[in-house]
Every structure is written in C-alpha cells, then in structure tokens.
Length: 478
Image (cartoon, helix red, strand yellow):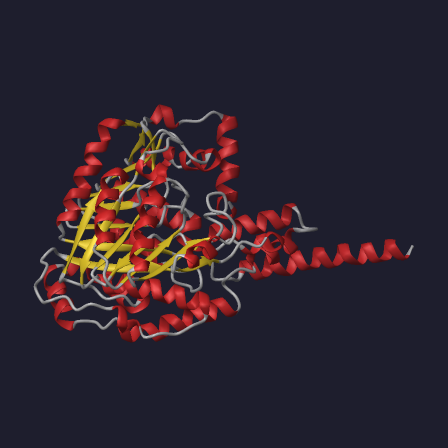
C-alpha cells in the first residue's frame, strides 16, 4: 500500500514536471524547431519527457565552464583591436557587405583584416603536404585543435614533427575533443602526449556515467604556427581525410592556410578555449607576430568563432547573411543539410528571387538517418528553383559557401542543428580574395562528378514521406 501511494506520487510529480517544462520551453528564446521537438516528445511521453529534458539540456550552457568561456572572451577582446582605416576602406569598396562585418565585429568581436592571404586546398591529399611543410617551419610554438585525431599515418606524420619540434624547445599545445576521438584514440591519450613534452587537453572529457552531458563538442579545426600561419577547414587528422583509408567512397574535403594579420584571431580563438578549459589566464600577446604592412594584398579576411555558451548563433548568421545578400549565385557544399524554417525560407526566397542556388551533398552517406533527413528537404528546394547535387564518388565533407564571385566562407560548421547550435565551431569570411575564385572553380569542377536530383527523384512515396516527416521533427534532438 505504501509503495502504491509512493509510486502514484512519483507519477503525478513527473507529469507535473513535464507540464511545467512544456510551459518553460514555449516561453524560451529558442529555435521553433527545438521547441516543437521537445514539446512533442514531452506530450508523447509525459511520464519521463520532462525528466529527459532536464538531463539532456543540463549541458555546458550552465555552470562554471560557461562562465569561464565568457570571462576569457571578455578578457581577450583587448587583444583584437579594430583598425578603423581597414574598416573604412572596406565600407567604401563593399557597402552591401557592411551588415555582415558589423555583426561579426560587434557581437562575435572579431575584426576584419586586410594585410593577410588565404590559400585554398582541396582535396585533403593536396592539403597534407602543405601542412607538413608549414609545421616544419615552426620556431616558437604550434597550437593544434581538432575534433578527430586517429592513430594512423596522417597523425603519425604530424606527431613525428611535433615530437621533434618539442625536443628543440618549440612550445606545442594540442587540444582534441574526447568524444570525437572516443573510438580513434586510447583513453587519457593526453598523458602520452605529455611524455613527449606536448601540452595536451582532452576537451570535455567523456564520462560514461554522465554521458548525457556530452552534447556540446569542440568541432573546430585550428592550427596556429608561430603566429604567422593558421589553418582551418573541414579536415581532421585521420587517414580518410586524405584518402589513405576508404570508408565512404572517395572523401572530398577542403582546408585553408591563412597568413598575415588574420592569424591573430585564430591564435585568440585557440587560447580562449584552452584557458577556459583549464580555468587559467595568460598574456596572449606573447603569441602574436607583427606582419609588416602591405606584406599581403589578397582582399579581406574576417575569422570568426561560434560557441554554444552564448545566445549568438554566429555560423548560422554568417550563412544567412550571405544567402540574403546574394544577387547572382550562392554555391553550398555540406555533408549534412538539416536546417530550421528560417534558413529554409531564406534559401527558397533567394531562389525564387532569381539567385542561382546550388547545393552539393554526399551520395555515399556516413550516417544514413542523417542523409535520409537531408533528402527530405530536396522536394521543396527543387520546387523553388534550387539545384541539388549529390557527389557520386563518395562523401563530401567540405563546409563552404561561395557567392557572387567576391564572397565566401570556409570553416567547420555543417548546415545542421548540431553544428549551428550545439558545437564549438569556427570559420573565415573572405572578400575579394583569390581563394574565392579557387573555391568557385573547385565547386564547378565537381559538378560533372555529381548527380543532379530531379523533381521526380525528389518525390517520395507515402511511407518514405512519413518517415522523413518524423525525422524532420526530431532532427534538433539527433
């Protein structure tokens, strides 16, 4: 009898909890897709839905780490001064792009640079020799931050250089995502790195008991060498990224090597998250290098980062502003395409307004459910005039947007909920650089290797349509 009363009390409490959380979710400043997904889940499973919400949303967004990230961001603002002359010159040349730069400068707090150069590399096997060459040049320090590192030939080649440089007194820091490397590195791999004289952090260490707290990952790919050179893009340190290992057909990826003043922002990005993770402080200026004026003349570069610890969806806003500002075309490469209604509406409106929108996604997926969800968007997009291509040789992992021959961005953020709202990400917004043309040429050269999806192919039978509709609803929770 006592057990019956206790269990009835627990049931009523859990139902009440779900009801209050539904009211809380409705009134949150959050994406409608998230709200709908959680509300449906809690209404479908009212007994445990509210409890599940508390468990899965008690993430990095609350608590000590969030405060650490905010404090390091605030402290580092002084290390990223804005050059009024560069901004004024940019405004004179690119009046229509001023809102993009104003947003990133005022809210992401990263300045725009002119005395810089960016080189585009694709695929990974073309990038890798250039990376090794840059690492060999290091004299003072090397910072590395990656989502995935695998103990195979690509990483071993990099590690051999790192160990040799560390022995010569070069400061090496390595930060890898513990969840991203859970199947590719042994537990506590940082201890092996420390034995070589390499400072190392396993970001947001995986804890099996508290695995529900592992949702916010460091998905960034950053290398900084001596404050002179920086690297970003989609390529991790594993053999599939340079096609030495075949997992999903041919792996098409891309990266950028940046030189000059814009490297300072990537240096700050790395040190922000490093110090937030360790709850430490240091003088960032020790890792800056002065670039002689007019060393590079390659347009404008604005590096940016994004974090789930604030209310700014920086990567999403960069993509949205490029799409909304386009007059001639927007070309997109992404492995996953799972977006909310605002992004979908922006793409459809641009296409209906006469902008040539083309999107390349993989033909060979690495995650079948995610790929099925991606395909659920095809019909509405094609109906609006968007051209959808699937890369038939295998898997495309690039995260690139190109527009109107003068604007592009390359970085780590996919067109999906996880990248845009849950992960730490980064990228570089580029104007008038030779790299924009190189990226466009690479995109167009890929099209003969792709299959363009037709209206008839995008049509789905009732069973597939129902399954994809369900996936679209729960996509924010995947």
